[in-house]
Amino acid sequence: MGTESAGHRLGQVMLHSPYLRLAVLTAAGATVAYMIGSALAIVDPVPAAITAVVATRATFHHAAKEALFQVIGVVAGSAVAFAAISIIGFGPATIAILVLASFGIIRLLQVTDPRSAPYAAMAVAITVILVIGVQMGPEGALERFLGVMVGGACALIASYFTSRGKPVGRTEVELSTIQNELAELLNDVAQGVQMTLTIDITRGWFDKAVHLRDETMRVAVDVEDVRDHRRWSPAIHEFDLRELERQLRATQVMAARVLSITSDINHLITERPTAGKSHELSPLARVFAAAAATIADPTNETAASETSVHQALQAADDTAAMVMLGGLVGHAQRITRLGEDHEDDTRT
Image 1: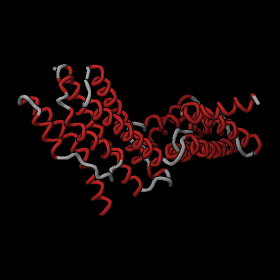
Image 2: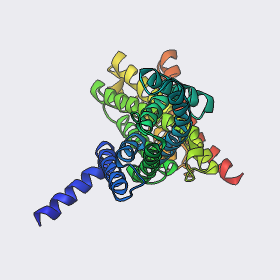
Image 3: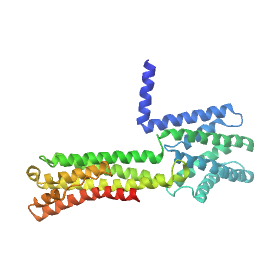
Image 4: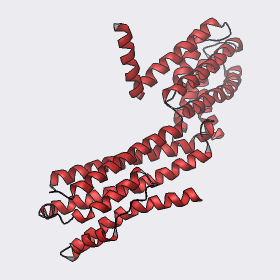
Protein backbone atom coordinates (compact mmCIF):
# COMPACT_ATOMS: atom_id res chain seq x y z
CA MET A 1 0.00 0.00 0.00
CA GLY A 2 2.85 2.35 0.89
CA THR A 3 4.68 1.58 -2.36
CA GLU A 4 1.54 2.27 -4.36
CA SER A 5 1.04 5.60 -2.56
CA ALA A 6 4.68 6.60 -3.16
CA GLY A 7 4.33 5.72 -6.83
CA HIS A 8 1.19 7.84 -7.08
CA ARG A 9 2.96 10.80 -5.47
CA LEU A 10 5.91 10.42 -7.86
CA GLY A 11 3.49 10.37 -10.79
CA GLN A 12 1.83 13.57 -9.58
CA VAL A 13 5.20 15.30 -9.15
CA MET A 14 6.24 14.26 -12.67
CA LEU A 15 3.03 15.65 -14.13
CA HIS A 16 3.66 19.07 -12.60
CA SER A 17 7.47 19.19 -12.87
CA PRO A 18 8.74 19.41 -16.47
CA TYR A 19 12.33 19.21 -15.22
CA LEU A 20 11.78 15.94 -13.34
CA ARG A 21 9.70 14.51 -16.18
CA LEU A 22 12.50 15.28 -18.67
CA ALA A 23 15.11 13.77 -16.34
CA VAL A 24 13.16 10.53 -15.83
CA LEU A 25 12.29 10.11 -19.51
CA THR A 26 15.86 10.88 -20.61
CA ALA A 27 17.13 8.22 -18.21
CA ALA A 28 14.51 5.78 -19.48
CA GLY A 29 15.38 6.48 -23.13
CA ALA A 30 19.11 6.00 -22.49
CA THR A 31 18.47 2.77 -20.55
CA VAL A 32 16.25 1.30 -23.27
CA ALA A 33 18.77 2.31 -25.95
CA TYR A 34 21.57 0.60 -24.03
CA MET A 35 19.46 -2.55 -23.53
CA ILE A 36 18.66 -2.71 -27.26
CA GLY A 37 22.34 -2.25 -28.11
CA SER A 38 23.30 -5.01 -25.67
CA ALA A 39 20.73 -7.39 -27.13
CA LEU A 40 21.74 -6.81 -30.76
CA ALA A 41 25.25 -7.78 -31.77
CA ILE A 42 25.37 -5.26 -34.62
CA VAL A 43 24.54 -2.28 -32.35
CA ASP A 44 27.03 -0.68 -29.97
CA PRO A 45 25.12 0.07 -26.73
CA VAL A 46 27.35 2.96 -25.53
CA PRO A 47 26.78 5.34 -28.50
CA ALA A 48 23.12 4.32 -28.39
CA ALA A 49 22.78 5.44 -24.76
CA ILE A 50 24.82 8.62 -25.27
CA THR A 51 22.83 9.64 -28.36
CA ALA A 52 19.56 9.06 -26.50
CA VAL A 53 20.74 11.48 -23.80
CA VAL A 54 22.09 14.07 -26.27
CA ALA A 55 19.01 14.04 -28.53
CA THR A 56 16.20 13.93 -25.95
CA ARG A 57 14.46 17.29 -25.66
CA ALA A 58 11.54 18.85 -23.82
CA THR A 59 9.50 18.90 -27.04
CA PHE A 60 9.13 16.38 -29.86
CA HIS A 61 9.95 18.85 -32.66
CA HIS A 62 13.25 19.78 -31.01
CA ALA A 63 14.11 16.10 -30.57
CA ALA A 64 13.27 15.34 -34.20
CA LYS A 65 15.59 18.10 -35.34
CA GLU A 66 18.38 16.98 -33.01
CA ALA A 67 18.09 13.33 -34.06
CA LEU A 68 18.32 14.34 -37.72
CA PHE A 69 21.42 16.43 -36.92
CA GLN A 70 23.02 13.41 -35.35
CA VAL A 71 22.33 11.06 -38.25
CA ILE A 72 23.27 13.47 -41.05
CA GLY A 73 26.25 14.80 -39.13
CA VAL A 74 27.55 11.34 -38.36
CA VAL A 75 27.26 10.17 -41.98
CA ALA A 76 29.02 13.24 -43.38
CA GLY A 77 31.48 13.52 -40.49
CA SER A 78 32.44 9.86 -40.69
CA ALA A 79 33.18 10.20 -44.39
CA VAL A 80 35.50 13.13 -43.65
CA ALA A 81 37.03 11.26 -40.72
CA PHE A 82 37.86 8.09 -42.64
CA ALA A 83 39.34 10.18 -45.45
CA ALA A 84 41.54 11.99 -42.92
CA ILE A 85 42.55 8.74 -41.19
CA SER A 86 43.53 7.16 -44.51
CA ILE A 87 45.84 10.10 -45.19
CA ILE A 88 47.31 11.14 -41.82
CA GLY A 89 46.16 8.36 -39.49
CA PHE A 90 44.23 8.78 -36.25
CA GLY A 91 45.61 11.40 -33.89
CA PRO A 92 45.13 14.91 -32.49
CA ALA A 93 45.01 16.41 -35.99
CA THR A 94 42.18 14.04 -36.92
CA ILE A 95 40.16 15.14 -33.89
CA ALA A 96 40.60 18.78 -34.91
CA ILE A 97 39.49 17.97 -38.45
CA LEU A 98 36.42 16.12 -37.12
CA VAL A 99 35.32 19.06 -34.99
CA LEU A 100 35.89 21.60 -37.76
CA ALA A 101 34.07 19.36 -40.23
CA SER A 102 31.08 19.14 -37.86
CA PHE A 103 30.86 22.92 -37.69
CA GLY A 104 31.15 23.15 -41.47
CA ILE A 105 28.46 20.50 -42.05
CA ILE A 106 25.93 22.24 -39.80
CA ARG A 107 26.62 25.59 -41.46
CA LEU A 108 26.30 24.13 -44.99
CA LEU A 109 23.08 22.27 -44.22
CA GLN A 110 21.48 25.41 -42.69
CA VAL A 111 19.03 23.28 -40.73
CA THR A 112 19.20 25.45 -37.64
CA ASP A 113 19.24 29.13 -36.81
CA PRO A 114 22.63 30.88 -36.38
CA ARG A 115 22.20 31.19 -32.61
CA SER A 116 21.91 27.45 -31.96
CA ALA A 117 24.19 26.27 -34.82
CA PRO A 118 27.39 26.14 -32.68
CA TYR A 119 25.73 23.92 -30.07
CA ALA A 120 24.29 21.62 -32.74
CA ALA A 121 27.77 21.34 -34.29
CA MET A 122 29.31 20.47 -30.91
CA ALA A 123 26.73 17.73 -30.33
CA VAL A 124 27.40 16.29 -33.80
CA ALA A 125 31.17 16.41 -33.21
CA ILE A 126 30.77 14.40 -30.01
CA THR A 127 28.77 11.73 -31.80
CA VAL A 128 31.18 11.57 -34.77
CA ILE A 129 34.14 11.06 -32.43
CA LEU A 130 32.20 8.26 -30.70
CA VAL A 131 31.40 6.58 -34.01
CA ILE A 132 34.97 6.73 -35.33
CA GLY A 133 36.52 5.61 -32.06
CA VAL A 134 40.24 5.23 -31.48
CA GLN A 135 42.05 3.36 -34.22
CA MET A 136 38.98 1.30 -35.08
CA GLY A 137 38.07 -0.09 -38.48
CA PRO A 138 34.91 0.42 -40.53
CA GLU A 139 33.25 -2.65 -38.95
CA GLY A 140 33.31 -1.14 -35.48
CA ALA A 141 32.21 2.20 -36.87
CA LEU A 142 29.12 0.57 -38.40
CA GLU A 143 28.11 -0.85 -35.03
CA ARG A 144 28.49 2.57 -33.42
CA PHE A 145 26.57 4.26 -36.24
CA LEU A 146 23.68 1.85 -35.74
CA GLY A 147 23.93 2.68 -32.05
CA VAL A 148 23.39 6.34 -32.97
CA MET A 149 20.32 5.38 -34.98
CA VAL A 150 18.89 3.38 -32.09
CA GLY A 151 19.65 6.18 -29.62
CA GLY A 152 18.00 8.76 -31.87
CA ALA A 153 14.86 6.62 -32.13
CA CYS A 154 14.70 6.19 -28.35
CA ALA A 155 15.19 9.95 -27.91
CA LEU A 156 12.24 10.65 -30.22
CA ILE A 157 9.98 8.31 -28.26
CA ALA A 158 11.07 9.75 -24.91
CA SER A 159 10.66 13.33 -26.14
CA TYR A 160 7.12 12.61 -27.30
CA PHE A 161 6.12 12.09 -23.67
CA THR A 162 8.17 14.88 -22.06
CA SER A 163 5.44 17.45 -22.77
CA ARG A 164 1.74 16.68 -22.48
CA GLY A 165 -0.37 17.25 -25.59
CA LYS A 166 0.50 18.84 -28.92
CA PRO A 167 2.66 22.00 -29.04
CA VAL A 168 -0.16 24.21 -30.33
CA GLY A 169 -2.66 22.76 -27.87
CA ARG A 170 -0.33 23.30 -24.90
CA THR A 171 0.26 26.92 -25.84
CA GLU A 172 -3.46 27.54 -26.40
CA VAL A 173 -4.13 26.28 -22.87
CA GLU A 174 -1.47 28.64 -21.50
CA LEU A 175 -2.98 31.61 -23.35
CA SER A 176 -6.46 30.71 -22.12
CA THR A 177 -5.15 30.55 -18.56
CA ILE A 178 -3.57 34.00 -18.93
CA GLN A 179 -6.80 35.41 -20.35
CA ASN A 180 -8.82 33.99 -17.45
CA GLU A 181 -6.42 35.55 -14.97
CA LEU A 182 -6.63 38.90 -16.80
CA ALA A 183 -10.42 38.71 -16.63
CA GLU A 184 -10.30 37.94 -12.90
CA LEU A 185 -7.93 40.85 -12.32
CA LEU A 186 -10.13 43.29 -14.24
CA ASN A 187 -13.19 42.05 -12.34
CA ASP A 188 -11.32 42.76 -9.11
CA VAL A 189 -10.63 46.26 -10.42
CA ALA A 190 -14.31 46.73 -11.36
CA GLN A 191 -15.36 45.80 -7.83
CA GLY A 192 -12.51 47.64 -6.16
CA VAL A 193 -13.18 51.05 -7.73
CA GLN A 194 -16.59 51.03 -6.05
CA MET A 195 -14.96 50.82 -2.64
CA THR A 196 -12.24 52.70 -0.82
CA LEU A 197 -8.96 52.25 -2.66
CA THR A 198 -5.55 52.16 -0.99
CA ILE A 199 -2.04 52.15 -2.39
CA ASP A 200 -1.58 48.53 -1.27
CA ILE A 201 -4.64 47.42 -3.27
CA THR A 202 -3.72 49.27 -6.46
CA ARG A 203 -0.07 48.21 -6.20
CA GLY A 204 -1.21 44.58 -5.95
CA TRP A 205 -3.27 45.00 -9.11
CA PHE A 206 -0.32 46.55 -10.92
CA ASP A 207 2.11 43.80 -9.83
CA LYS A 208 -0.33 41.13 -10.99
CA ALA A 209 -0.74 42.86 -14.36
CA VAL A 210 3.05 43.04 -14.79
CA HIS A 211 3.30 39.32 -14.06
CA LEU A 212 0.61 38.47 -16.64
CA ARG A 213 2.27 40.73 -19.22
CA ASP A 214 5.56 38.89 -18.62
CA GLU A 215 3.80 35.53 -18.97
CA THR A 216 2.37 36.69 -22.31
CA MET A 217 5.86 37.61 -23.49
CA ARG A 218 7.13 34.17 -22.46
CA VAL A 219 4.35 32.44 -24.39
CA ALA A 220 5.11 34.65 -27.41
CA VAL A 221 8.65 33.21 -27.42
CA ASP A 222 7.14 29.69 -27.32
CA VAL A 223 4.86 30.50 -30.26
CA GLU A 224 7.81 31.80 -32.26
CA ASP A 225 9.69 28.61 -31.44
CA VAL A 226 6.77 26.47 -32.66
CA ARG A 227 6.64 28.53 -35.88
CA ASP A 228 10.39 28.11 -36.45
CA HIS A 229 10.29 24.34 -35.86
CA ARG A 230 6.92 23.35 -37.33
CA ARG A 231 8.57 21.42 -40.17
CA TRP A 232 10.08 18.99 -37.66
CA SER A 233 6.75 17.74 -36.28
CA PRO A 234 3.72 16.30 -38.13
CA ALA A 235 1.59 17.38 -35.15
CA ILE A 236 1.96 21.09 -36.01
CA HIS A 237 -0.47 22.25 -38.71
CA GLU A 238 -0.36 25.63 -40.42
CA PHE A 239 -4.04 26.43 -39.83
CA ASP A 240 -3.78 25.67 -36.11
CA LEU A 241 -0.62 27.75 -35.89
CA ARG A 242 -2.30 30.76 -37.52
CA GLU A 243 -5.19 30.51 -35.06
CA LEU A 244 -2.71 30.32 -32.20
CA GLU A 245 -0.94 33.44 -33.43
CA ARG A 246 -4.29 35.26 -33.66
CA GLN A 247 -5.08 34.27 -30.07
CA LEU A 248 -1.62 35.43 -29.00
CA ARG A 249 -2.08 38.86 -30.60
CA ALA A 250 -5.41 39.31 -28.84
CA THR A 251 -3.92 38.25 -25.50
CA GLN A 252 -1.02 40.65 -25.97
CA VAL A 253 -3.47 43.53 -26.48
CA MET A 254 -5.47 42.47 -23.44
CA ALA A 255 -2.39 42.19 -21.24
CA ALA A 256 -1.04 45.57 -22.40
CA ARG A 257 -4.37 47.34 -21.81
CA VAL A 258 -4.93 45.78 -18.40
CA LEU A 259 -1.40 46.76 -17.43
CA SER A 260 -2.08 50.34 -18.55
CA ILE A 261 -5.33 50.44 -16.56
CA THR A 262 -3.74 49.17 -13.35
CA SER A 263 -0.70 51.40 -13.85
CA ASP A 264 -2.86 54.53 -14.27
CA ILE A 265 -5.03 53.68 -11.27
CA ASN A 266 -2.00 52.94 -9.12
CA HIS A 267 -0.38 56.21 -10.20
CA LEU A 268 -3.58 58.14 -9.41
CA ILE A 269 -3.95 56.69 -5.89
CA THR A 270 -0.22 57.15 -5.23
CA GLU A 271 -0.32 60.80 -6.26
CA ARG A 272 -3.76 61.58 -4.81
CA PRO A 273 -4.77 59.14 -2.04
CA THR A 274 -8.01 61.09 -1.53
CA ALA A 275 -9.21 59.90 -4.94
CA GLY A 276 -9.55 56.43 -3.49
CA LYS A 277 -11.93 57.67 -0.81
CA SER A 278 -14.02 59.92 -3.03
CA HIS A 279 -15.04 57.03 -5.33
CA GLU A 280 -14.47 59.14 -8.43
CA LEU A 281 -13.55 55.97 -10.32
CA SER A 282 -16.73 54.09 -9.37
CA PRO A 283 -18.63 55.09 -12.57
CA LEU A 284 -16.00 53.09 -14.50
CA ALA A 285 -16.98 49.84 -12.78
CA ARG A 286 -19.31 48.84 -15.63
CA VAL A 287 -16.68 49.72 -18.22
CA PHE A 288 -14.12 47.45 -16.53
CA ALA A 289 -16.69 44.69 -15.98
CA ALA A 290 -17.60 44.74 -19.69
CA ALA A 291 -13.92 44.49 -20.63
CA ALA A 292 -13.43 41.61 -18.21
CA ALA A 293 -16.40 39.78 -19.74
CA THR A 294 -14.86 40.20 -23.20
CA ILE A 295 -11.55 38.77 -22.01
CA ALA A 296 -13.27 35.78 -20.41
CA ASP A 297 -15.39 35.17 -23.52
CA PRO A 298 -14.64 37.11 -26.76
CA THR A 299 -18.13 36.20 -28.07
CA ASN A 300 -19.75 37.96 -25.09
CA GLU A 301 -21.81 40.94 -26.24
CA THR A 302 -21.72 42.74 -22.90
CA ALA A 303 -20.84 46.41 -23.32
CA ALA A 304 -20.62 49.34 -20.96
CA SER A 305 -23.37 51.88 -21.37
CA GLU A 306 -22.55 55.34 -22.68
CA THR A 307 -24.18 56.72 -19.53
CA SER A 308 -21.57 55.14 -17.28
CA VAL A 309 -18.78 56.55 -19.45
CA HIS A 310 -20.29 60.05 -19.37
CA GLN A 311 -20.78 59.85 -15.61
CA ALA A 312 -17.13 58.98 -15.16
CA LEU A 313 -15.92 61.87 -17.32
CA GLN A 314 -18.31 64.34 -15.68
CA ALA A 315 -16.94 63.35 -12.28
CA ALA A 316 -13.52 64.68 -13.25
CA ASP A 317 -12.80 67.91 -11.43
CA ASP A 318 -9.96 69.12 -13.67
CA THR A 319 -8.43 68.58 -17.09
CA ALA A 320 -5.74 66.17 -15.82
CA ALA A 321 -8.33 63.94 -14.17
CA MET A 322 -10.47 63.98 -17.32
CA VAL A 323 -7.49 62.93 -19.43
CA MET A 324 -6.67 60.12 -17.01
CA LEU A 325 -10.27 58.87 -16.85
CA GLY A 326 -10.55 59.12 -20.62
CA GLY A 327 -7.42 57.00 -20.96
CA LEU A 328 -8.87 54.33 -18.66
CA VAL A 329 -12.08 54.27 -20.68
CA GLY A 330 -10.07 54.01 -23.91
CA HIS A 331 -8.05 51.02 -22.65
CA ALA A 332 -11.19 49.19 -21.49
CA GLN A 333 -13.09 49.87 -24.70
CA ARG A 334 -10.16 48.66 -26.80
CA ILE A 335 -10.40 45.34 -24.97
CA THR A 336 -14.18 45.24 -25.57
CA ARG A 337 -13.66 45.83 -29.30
CA LEU A 338 -11.56 42.65 -29.43
CA GLY A 339 -14.83 40.77 -29.03
CA GLU A 340 -16.24 42.55 -32.08
CA ASP A 341 -13.10 41.69 -34.06
CA HIS A 342 -13.50 38.06 -33.03
CA GLU A 343 -17.09 38.06 -34.29
CA ASP A 344 -15.94 39.49 -37.63
CA ASP A 345 -13.25 36.82 -37.97
CA THR A 346 -15.81 34.10 -37.19
CA ARG A 347 -18.23 35.36 -39.84
CA THR A 348 -15.41 35.61 -42.36
